[in-house]
Image (cartoon, rainbow, N blue to C red; front, side):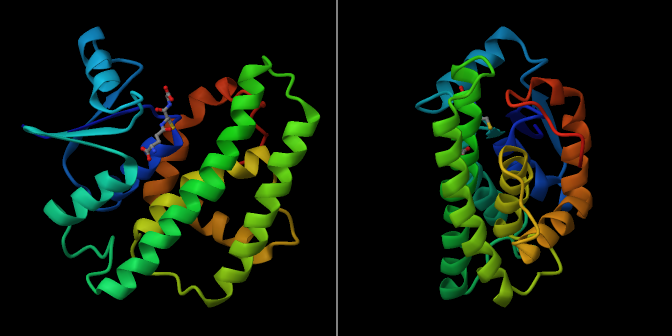
Length: 217
Ligand SMILES: N[C@@H](CCC(=O)N[C@@H](CS)C(=O)NCC(=O)O)C(=O)O
């Protein structure tokens, strides 16, 4: 039985799990939640405490949380791909940055999106200003961090977490010229074939972006 990944083509966390699968041509079946049966949709709902996706199924194993899916792939399918460094100290750094992208980019971006959903596209300006303020703080920090970051030849857990979170965060609050390294790195990430495949597959769903998708990317 092949690997099955349940998710949605427009979902940032689904991209995070898809990127290593695409980057390393791992055979798997993408089970889009647009197309699955009622039973499969229910399976995803029941797989984790809040019914979130992506969810990976490998025979009898079910793995949820995008980071854990990548860790699982690194352990069982891609041990030599460098997704997570084998050196414990180096791996700590990579895992720490993975937390940065989930907690301080992805989740902040999601707060802005949730506000637009909550208000049917009329977000409270004060809430959005606060989201932008906090994103700017992260952008500035990341721009500084990138000064010492050496781009790896293959995607790591960092790139898998960074690409989708920065892609959508930029739609909530644009990464401007004042953060040149971050802006440049986002463009670099979007040019990675595994990432651009996610971007293209998600394109038909752009009208669903609650804040309105910009005419770029
Ligand atoms: N911590 C989870 C977050 C996953 C998540 O928030 N997924 C979103 C899609 S990007 C989702 O399931 N949304 C539907 C829902 O919340 O019901 C992970 O890392 O996988």
